[in-house]
Image 1 (spheres, rainbow, N blue to C red):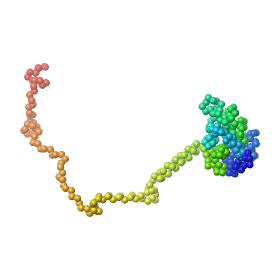
Image 2: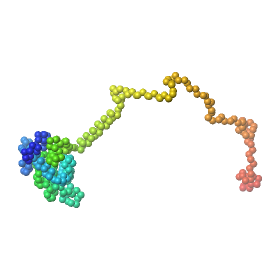
Image 3: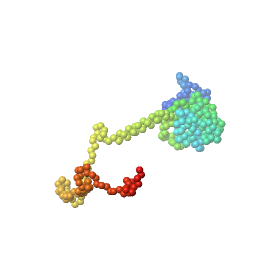
Length: 322
């Protein structure tokens, strides 16, 4: 497939990545159409995939993807959680349209629904899990590229890329290789310079682990802020913070006084203190009002005014109601 070109040949660092991710490890079963990609079988019954053929089919799939004029006409699908993040990253880097998660039946055949689309090429992670889009693609004549394990069915699959599609690292690495090769053939990146995107970006991450890492990062950030807020004098062994001496008051112009204690005292004229309220005037008015001995409580009171006929007390002309 490489045609003897050194640029398309399998590099040693690429083989190291494939072996580290376990891409060469198949399953204990083998499909009759996948026997051509099997190198040998281990003692425990696991089949080993030929990585040279894996890389050749990867180059073929990349050439087919590049042949599509509009990158959004390439639909990449992964119903398995291990491949959803890789599918989204592949779509963001190459411009393809991604379907991560459950595939809605009728997306390729039912024109009424809002999610209807007509892609020109379909790339799936697992032919067994993604059987629904593969079946619908066969109805509307859409070519299919699939990452296949040794026991994967190849019905309606046009290009099968043999690899381990059950491991989280293996799936992410294969999508990373496919994305890198597509960008290299398009001329977006150079083959002489390593791609700055790491394969770890395509790997599956557990949501619980991600949440724990975010909480740990927030706690560490809060701890650093608290430590930075504490002054140096409050730490053990810290030197006390000395306050800067206050600046002397400015001396008014034309004054020769340099020592305030030696200056002459300023004489202040004395002012008589005025009372706030005047003293009450003394009176000689007697409380009895009629004269006599004020201490004699038995004195008869002064006679009051004589009642008139209009009073209720009655007078000489008042009627006798009795």
